[in-house]
Image (cartoon, rainbow, N blue to C red; front, side, top):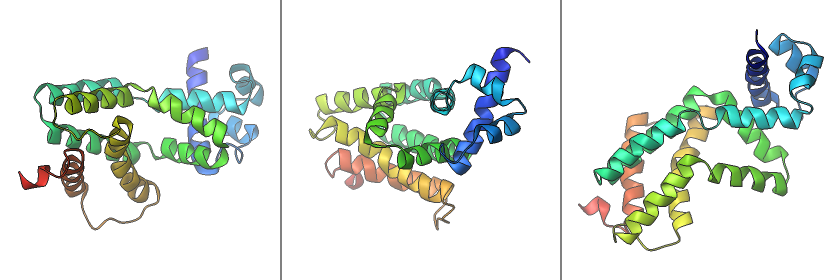
Length: 204
């Protein structure tokens, strides 16, 4: 293996273990065994577990985001707000389904870290291409008089928070939903659109 391949192998093993035991509950010995390397190799690439966690966060958190943003921009160009929300919600549900270890790792981090670290991680997420796109999208639709003129940040957060909450409950916690994902996507898209338009969408 090349050095980069070995590094990627360690990161993938770390995401799986951090997702099961958290950062504090994962030892470097366990990491080395899971990755099939020595502890010395881990420290060569990542001097501390925090460094390894940061690398894992950056490696997997925003995978596929650029392609998703391109797709969402197509909906903006067609002025298809409901289609955009359906695609966004579907991507969120799929992401939690496809990469449970990553999202479990992030959940552990929110609970283990203090306010300073959590604010730093949140600010890092807010600078992601997806959040920046959603901010621009909401501002554009507000300027066009389509979305209600409330705080942009709150409207942007609302578009993400509802599907994320559902994804955490069903994909991470394993709570069975009485509704299939397609119905969840359809209902949430119309509900969110009704909210950001100020109560007009469901009547159209």
